[in-house]
Image 1 (spheres, rainbow, N blue to C red):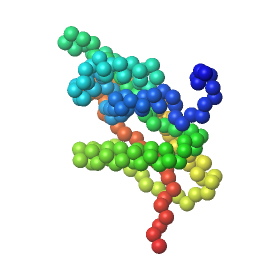
Image 2 (image 1 turned 30 degrees about the vertical axis):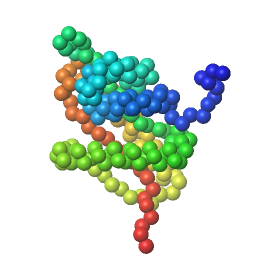
Image 3 (image 1 turned 90 degrees about the vertical axis):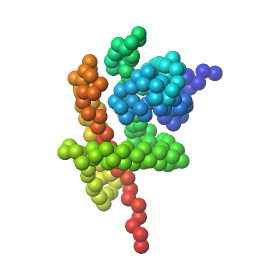
Image 4 (image 1 turned 60 degrees about the vertical axis):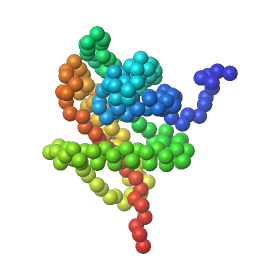
Length: 198
């Protein structure tokens, strides 16, 4: 039986599921998200493993359309290939999120929260949270179902615009030095507030 021919229930995109099934591929994706671009040589040096091993996993991620090669750089005796994420590392539309079983949503939300808090702490310690172009907003809204749907649409439109800006900027920065540009993190979160204590 060829499972690819069947209409299987999907938890997440099969390419992403395949990537996350191997810890090194997950590490590559997170590193690419953090740095903007990464090479097999960089990951090999960081983890002290052979470059041919990391190159294999980069190839699998590229075949799964999770990373794109963005540039090359000549090193002593070899060409270093650099890759970036094709899209945000984790992005579920509303229907996909609702199809994920609650225990998986809980685990994913917990891991993502820990990661975000770690990034915020690192940025705070580096002093970048006080930069002039840093933005924080915290808004409480008492909502009904219509308002929640309208707010979800705002988030969807904002994400689409950010991705389009990202694509245009990548074209402008293509062929420039790795230090060109500034890596920024954008967070969008909306959730039901915890009940107030009695």
